[in-house]
Length: 80
Image (cartoon, rainbow, N blue to C red; front, side, top):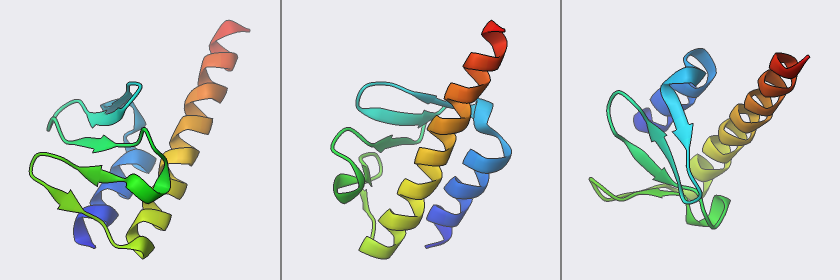
């Protein structure tokens, strides 16, 4: 669960360190990539292979959705 807490903290405090593609959310500095393509149920890290508990997936998915929402709002603010 420590990894999940670190990821959530990074998403919240350093959102610019993350970039999203169509299948992965990747941390730019470390290269850690989280599979996000199929939603909360399928969250995982492939290298090294890490599977999350259901509870961890719920917490992580909430943080990822918040990150996406804030990213979208930031982009809208830049246009105005």
